[in-house]
Every structure is written in C-alpha cells, then in structure tokens.
Length: 374
Image 1 (cartoon, rainbow, N blue to C red):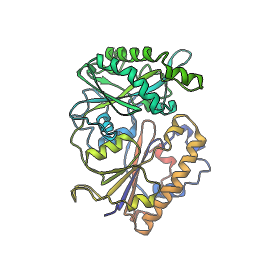
Image 2: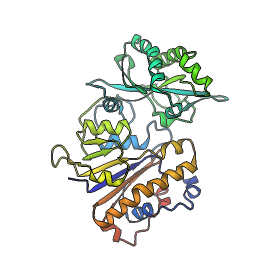
Image 3: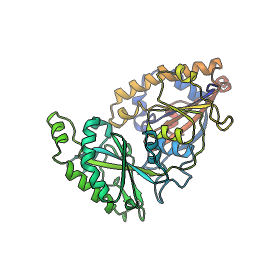
C-alpha cells in the first residue's frame, strides 16, 4: 500500500513578518500559494520568544505522543528527543534518560559569548574521535555513561546529571549563550534562575582539555573554527509512542528515531516525490496508522540561521519545483487524497490541510504572507 496522504514538515519556512514582504517578493511559488489558498487551517502555535526548543521539535514530540509521556525530566521543555536520536544513531537507550552533547564553537564577541551552529564547525569524524577520547574520562569521572555511536553526536546518562533545562543548539545559535546554558529545574526561568553546577564543571573541564588540543591547533592553522566547547540538549527517555504516520522520510535523527520507536517505516529523504510515493508504507499492524507519509525538509535551516536570504530563497524555490508542484499535480490527478503542510518559523508553526475537494473551493484566498498574521 502506498501513501495517499503526504504531510510535509518544513522548518524555518516562515520568516519574521517584518522581513516577509521583501524575502517573498518576485518568488514564483505557484504550487505553495495554491495549496495554501485552498487549505483549511488545522492549527497554529505562536510560541514564546525565549522558548528553548524549536517549533518543529515540539511538533514532532507532540505528534508522536512524547510530549505527554514521562520521557521528559521534570521541568524540561516539550522535546525530550535525545534517547530517540541515540536509537536512530544505532545506540541502545534502554530505559535510561539521555542527553545529547555536541562539540561546538563558542565565539567571543565584544561583551558576550555567541554559540555558532554545530554544522558550521564542519568537524570531521576522525577529529571528533580524537576530541572524544580526551573528553571521555572527564565525563566518566562524574559518574556518567557516555555512548557515541555517531562520531559527531554523543550521549550521556547518569544520576549526576540531575534535572536540567537545556536549549536546542539551533535555537541558541547566533545568540548570546548566557540565557541558553543548562539550568537547574528548581527555577529554570526568570531572574532567579540558577546555572547548573554539574554542567558548568563538565563544560569547563572539556574546554580546558581542548584548549590546545592538536586537533584544534591544526584547524586554526587551516583557518577553521576550533571545537572549543560542548552543548547539551534534548534530555529524555524512550516511552510508548503513538504511531501517527505510516512512513517517515527524514535525514534528522530525531524524526528517524521516533519512526523506529513507533514502528513506523523510516528512511532518508528521497530524491523526489515519485520515489516517496512508490515506497511501501503499510504499517506493521494494519489499521494502526493512517496511510500518511511524513517528509521533513531541512534545506531552509542553515540559510535562515545564517541570514543568507539569497540561499533561503533559492532553497524555497527548489522545494516548490521538486516537491510542492509535483504534490499539487498528484493531488489534482487523484494520486494523493490530501497534502498537509506544517510550516515553521523560529518560535511558531502553522499546519494547513488541502484535500482534492478543496482545490475546487475557488473562494478561498489565503496567501503565504497571511500565515504570519493569522
């Protein structure tokens, strides 16, 4: 059985309303506009300015039932995805609570420290392995278990972690790290918030161990950013999940891990819509999930975070050409019964659903720009 419904999750598709008119000017988004014009608004979440998770992370956790489970430590945000990321990376989470830690570069600005997004570091697997060898004893001395099935993403678990509130690295990227560093859950927000002593100790010791590490010295000589710190995020444990999708196509470990844990089909994002539509997505137990395929697109993320608006426009145009236009054609021809879009910004998201019958509702006139103010 092939998917008759597609759900497209597109992080960083919604720019700030102040920039939208300029960024969208002269872009030919015929399919996107048509889908939005005829769609029904399913839901919209505004989010909060200092929310520590990204809207697509919260949406995934909620759709799979993770946000409502006991997987998140008390006081944590709504995206406890680390154990599922570990599962996708080939690890064995068991019943423990895990947090993901990533090597990062923290840049010294004039009067504050700024986190650079982990992808910009472009750390190579052999470099990461050498840095991990230096960091491992520091982690284990604190009574923590460390797993590193993926050379660029490491996972820690243990009672010494206590309850921490952390932030997604992509949420904190480009900003002063002060308010985004892990805090204790006894008072995670507000003026009385308290930085986690456990995390401060571990982070400081790793920073000192890496300060003059040969890997970083060689990178600096080549003009590359050094891996001068680590970032902790996404604490959570495995938990019983819903199975809202029969198939999940994504290159992101969180989505792949949720697919594995929910026994949905999981695969990397295919090259085009035709390949996605040909994938057998019958759920393991017939009738336990809709024949809906979820596709997550991350091509807008880096341009958005780096404010490379030319690249962002190019990536949006590519999505229109390669996915949205074929999806609209498949919907019009009856190959698909419905196309659902979840479009995300930095804090907000909107989900809109378009059925084949909706295409005949010519009186609907929603525009892409209107989503910013609905």
